[in-house]
Length: 628
Image (cartoon, rainbow, N blue to C red; front, side, top):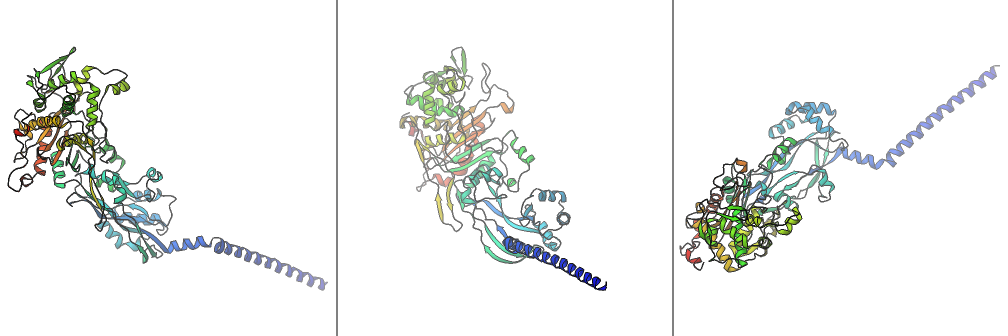
């Protein structure tokens, strides 16, 4: 019996030992499999994660290229911006760290947490931007309490700074953060979310030259995510610098003259095509876009009735009014419908069919030829021309003068304008052209629409002897160390359809506009020996009542006519051409003419119009045009 018990105990012990050994063996097998999985199958990934926890790559943003005027005056700079970021892996617990940060910076914790929640799916090791441009005081607070704020860092980034704020804002443009559609579109393969790109003006047009190339810094961090040492550094490459064709002094003057007005001024060298000034009013401050606009701010900007975000100089389309008489005179003279001796009597009105077309001057101008009609802007003279001139022929000359098509200046959303013809009307309205519509068209009313830059190109062509010059705004591009890599060049688009004889007649008329006492723009005389040639225009936006002249009307401000003045100076040796449009300015002579006058005085110093013998070389006498 005892033997049986001992045998049973021994077997029971061996059974227990076998079970224990099996369990131990299974545990070792599981441990081995786990180690095999971690070290062999997933070893590379865990090594990567370990390195990421210790070694980080910090992006170094490139400094964007500077923008200067033609004389080297700095227009657009870069300034340091202190950007606050968080690395979620290091900032634990996140809510607690955010709460401490909120107290130090006086920023609502919920505002900061909203930023954190908005980036779900982003790597825990990647910095998340909490707030841009926190300022030096906030930077000092963060640095002073950095041991209480693990995972919180402040990076110094170059931030665009527009020195003169509203000055040349529409020409220079602005930066804004790249959006998802732009990232997906394929046009910006080297960009990532959070990068800023040019969205408007020069900043957009020359983005690839200005942007530079980002660098990086490999650093070792401690358990709190704070940098222990720099392992490797790749310097960022700054962008190229751009020199514009504009003259900052003239640009500033143009902006001052447009203050509290809606409209545009654009000036150019008539022989080269270099833009000397381009101002659109009202303007905006591009610095507001650098740190990001709220939806409310953006909606407030785009909803303003005077459209501050539109560049009126290249995008604004207006009836050309009496400035269009330049084209009508060219067409009539070239088609031999009139000559310099042809006169029409102006009693202040003209009957056509069952309608009476009135001149702006109620008492009329009497008997005038084409030169005097340009000088006094006599509507009745051009009404009579309209009786003889086919609308399609007039359209051909207008398009040959560069109207009705973009100039090619290279700024986005340039307006085309509209030059009507019989074919256009048939397609647009399904009806035939009428003679009465030609009567309106020849004085720049009706369907006609032009942009200030188009009228500038036409005026420059009159000034330079008939060449249609393409306007341009980039004078040269240089590398950061001063090497020239690209130059702007003069491009002749063609000749306007005009003979030298016709050109001289038109130029005589434009000279008399300013320099004769009966000229409509005598107020625009610069004085100082400088003679200016030009043409006024008053563009109606509502029709006149019967027997009503422009001076009889009492209209609300938003229904008053637009005021035009196009000009060039000095008359005999043009150095500058100017196009001015003042919305609802009413009369070109009083609203737009003085602006051109002051710009000419600003640009043409007394020394510029005196030759080596001390003789003024820009004075045009009547003798120059004696044959007409």
